[in-house]
Image: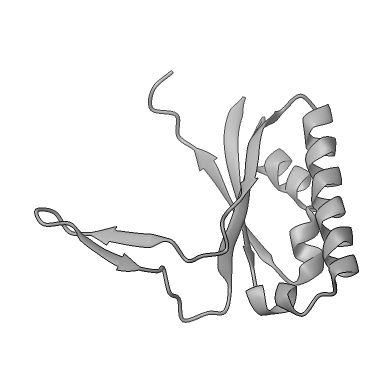
Amino acid sequence: MSQYLLLLYNDPQQWAQMSPEEMQKAVEKFVGWRKKLQATGLYIGSNKLADEPGKVLRGHKPVRVTDGPYSETKEILGGYFAFEADNYEEAVRMSQDCPCLEYNGSMELRQIDQMIR
């Protein structure tokens, strides 16, 4: 069985325009989706990333640190889920009902290449 990382991208302006009630409903949907994934026994972990943009490190001796990442698009990486699946087809099937898509987000699904076991 392989491990997969589902990266969730969203438009922060859309979330900022939500009422507290709408925001609570959205959070409940994500919690429900996580619980559904946990019930399969294939869930590894998930987290929402902090709203600040983070830091980008580039170069080598010296390492340059800048604020960011800043992108040409309006989407930002907002969180992730990690889980196991037999193959990409199953991982895609498992990911399709993630609430991220309901809120005009996009998702990137990547297989984890475990280097140390």
